Amino acid sequence: EARAEAEALRARLEAEIRDEMEDRRAAWRAHLVAERAAFLATLQREAGTQVLEIVRDVLAEYAGRDLSETLVARFVERLRALDEGTRAGLADAAGRPGASARVETAAALDGAQKAQITRALHDILSSRLPVDYGEDPGTGLGVRLTIGEHHVEWSAVRYLERLKTELGEILDAGLRTMTPAADRARDRETA
Image (cartoon, rainbow, N blue to C red; front, side):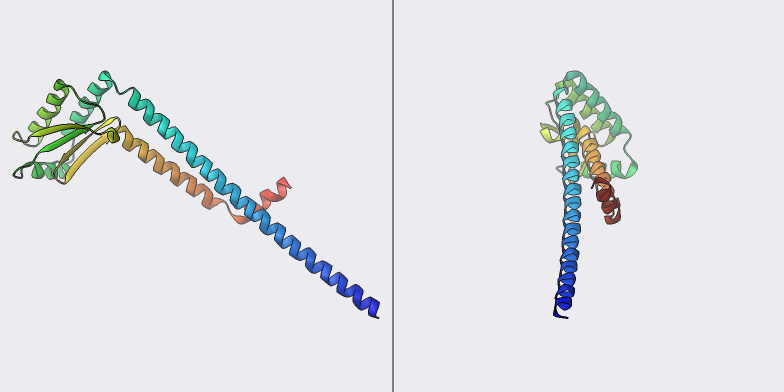
């Protein structure tokens, strides 16, 4: 009878240990799956960021004279096509006493390019608006106009930032769709 009780106790303890070991193995597998998903997400984000940085560098490197002329022409076109609300805000800011416009680009503009932008600003907003020009590498391939508290900007950097945001959203959505059940099924397939 004692032997039977000892054997039952041993069997029960072995079963408990097996169950505990299986629970630990399952937790360990789940942890590995989570770590792998986090690693892949980080890797994808880093790869996406690197692609964006390379594109940004290429754009900056090729932002030569021809590209600057095109950039100025596109900026003037966009100024002329401003929506009424934006145009009214800029015009209101330009009409205030002591107002001036600040135009910034990554590389210095030549006199003809500055004159083209100044003419457009005078035609569109106010003929008495003083225009100051400066460089800001942060604009990348683009132009930023600031008048008082109002500003407009058109640049490749904004497109790249939008691409970066969209890439992050896609990665986040992909991670949210990974369910624990799918992870367990994938683990069984690889085991």
